[in-house]
Length: 391
Ligand SMILES: Cc1cc2nc3c(=O)[nH]c(=O)nc-3n(C[C@H](O)[C@H](O)[C@H](O)COP(=O)(O)O)c2cc1C
Image 1 (tube, rainbow, N blue to C red):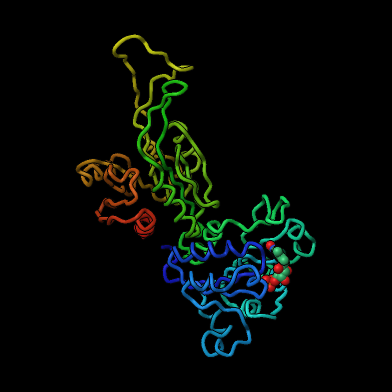
Image 2 (tube, helix red, strand yellow):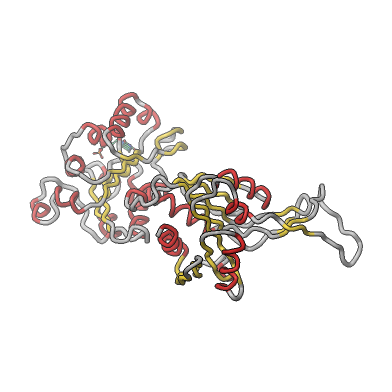
């Protein structure tokens, strides 16, 4: 619920992608936003207002010259109510009017009166998109401070292939989030490692653990939404993140260490959420090992370097270094020991049962304090964690 209490005005233009605006509205509402919909006359040729009305629970606005509207939510009140406006799909026609300040129906008039950020999601035929007229309007739109989610490339509804498809509704939501979130981390660089490491025994077998990387990925997203430049050093299977998170995929602990040391230098914050293997095989066999024909075999493991300790001890160390510690007992005591031993600023001590779970909980342990982090879904958990890191 990252848009709880936010007011979003959704302007719907008359393109074939109108049906996808329904999905977008649902996703925005799922994040807690209150959505009011304004449809152009052409948009209503594709989908009736009833669909948006029934799903949003709000009256859909269609007419500039509506007497009942003027006593309720007139065009100026509508745009004053909004924290932002999203135009999706934005037709070539609408883009022209928005860019040039033409106010000839409800949507274009309220856009001209808008003092809140406007995000435009174009959708049109590939030739319309590439046309000189449209490209000039897009340029003007951006110069005038409107935000845009680029259309995607692919098969278009008209049967042609190329750029012009409405961006995925989930990507439009991702573009909305930072626009309605305080940019408290703007100008900061956060480096985060996440996921399990893989230590190869032979060409096909590995030593790994149950970590999913979900928490590190969520933390990366949350920091990026708040304006940080985020570098995510991701072990295998770490979920996808926002496009503005710079992601570097790694496999082994040694590889993760190298990349962490490279990127952590001079960063503001380093958070080690990765479940790094403490040991690796003393040698990686070439090819696939065959059965040895004996009831047991000896395998030698050697200790891996400690990534957190190395980051905390490096030249131009990040301003704050934090480590996650998954324990099955004595969480706080182990965290306090680790804090000193590793030279870090804080430890997030959590129970091993958090691994792979939907919720997370734990303790935020610093030299002077222990604060309980209550059990929450991982999105809320990382939001709370960022509060602790930044205060
Ligand atoms: C079947 C059909 C599909 C259309 N799809 C699009 C489209 O995807 N993008 C677009 O810019 N215009 C599209 N148009 C043209 C617009 O509907 C037309 O330019 C209209 O004036 C736009 O009005 P509006 O911008 O006020 O919504 C389509 C027209 C038809 C008949």
